[in-house]
Image (cartoon, rainbow, N blue to C red; front, side, top):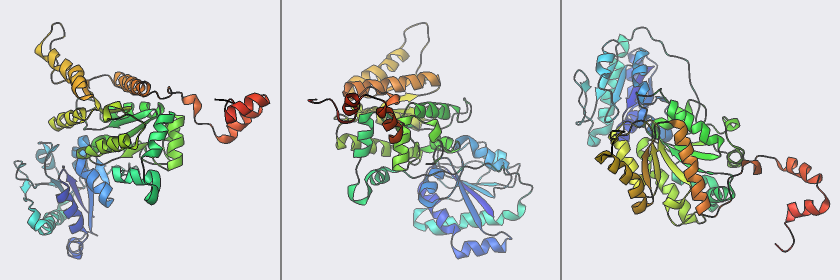
Length: 419
């Protein structure tokens, strides 16, 4: 197959390349070049876009874009904007891979530039694919690691609503009830990029796995979602031995993975929509800032992450960023930076109910997340989180009750008379 990797953030381009790759014209053009057809895969946000809409597999997240080229099997890497490593063209010069830029905002010296125009979208997509097919004859040795993992993507806010109640009873009521009862302790949105200053995926995965053990439902977008997919956490039947007893009950009952893939990194508004619908359903406060929920970007590295964080904070969310703070001052004296840090935390919380904090240590991130969730539960008057209450089957519970005296058994089953 002619291998084409799409990489970037503008879904119109990638959607049209998917459509063009399936046309008889392009398939015949590939066969004439000695290939069976065109195989597409994605990197970064574009990977999530075509994954959830078209079922096109992801080749990896941000820090794997160079590794795709290193396989020697990529005829073309098609890029648009954001998260494009400037050294890709120099790297590709050691192989036969063509780097094709498509945006007037992004031109890289040495790359092939085919500017994308929505008015001629399909024609340009075909032209891009023909460039890749023409390059097929130049392929040399390849080395593609046989490492792969299945996943279930595409839990948009519309689908979560449908999934919880079906066509006629679509509702967030089951999710609210699970949080109110304590089966789900709270919700964490773990999103954002990979950062080359930390071990690839480590901060994403260590925080995700620990919060799952604490009965925290995790939703993810972008590169963070792909990190969890590599561990099998985006499969319904997989990974449930790694989650708390209450969350496991919910996942098994509804038939969902412990981590819900909600799209690309620019789909974080979907998470805010879910929180708004949770509030509207009732029982979990009057606004987003009262919901037991936290947003985390453990490996953030770009300006867009900061802009996303600020509008989430303005909506009432508590947001934790991993890694270094861009506004930290000297540790031994008070500075303007300290004033800024205090303002985006305490000041913003007074104004909007949400706050932004920078926490480098993953265990501290976990601790602060659970502390915030438990504080919000207490403020709502919800039961204190107790994992011992859940995870046992009805048969196990009945066997325990049979050992009790009759009066105690009846009280356990039906409650104390008069209460």
